Amino acid sequence: MYYYISGELVLAEPNFAVVDAGGVGYKLTVSGTTLGKLAGKVGSRVKLYTHLAVREDAVELFGFAEEEELSAFRLLISVSGVGAKSAVSILSLMSPERFAAAVMTGDSKAISKAQGIGAKTAARVILELKDKVKKELSELPEDETGEEEPLTIGGRLAEAADALAVLGYSRAEAAYALKGMSPDTELEALIRAALSRLIK
Image (tube, rainbow, N blue to C red; front, side):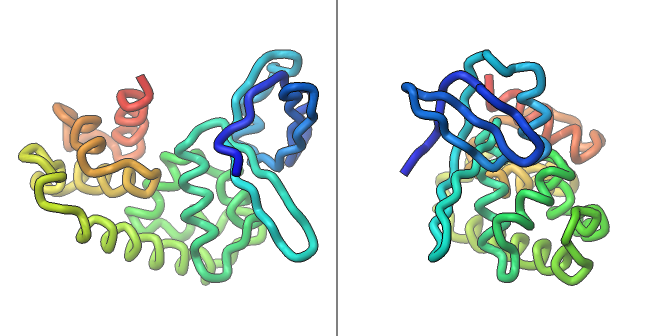
């Protein structure tokens, strides 16, 4: 329903923020990662990408400073047994690129450090999201991959390409973002550099 909300940041408190857009104050549930990006911006204009959750007993609007975090949130709530609060908890602990790296490297310990997330849930997140990414990639037409597809190189560049897919980017975008990068670079640094290139 809402793609993003742009307006004056009126309030930024633990777990939520209020944005005045057109005279309406929108209360958005936010992660610690997004809250960190809003620090010191009360009274300034901000843009938060949104997800509207409608349940039988409540309607809740979630806000994210970056589209990548929103993509990670939506992937997380697609995992069986992971609700919106658990997804926000995970994204409060780690940035989108760190989360994507944890998924692709199978680092369930990092994910299980989030409040309310046990070892079994963390393992399920990794298992289901890895399978989902593989399925989506296998369904891509061959001409979308391109000759310089990082997956043909293997290793860390392939993992970084998969991590970018976790954050909602296509194979072509991943190939462009990772072009010319060293496969010896740490995975999280590769993802961060690729995101910087894509956002420009």
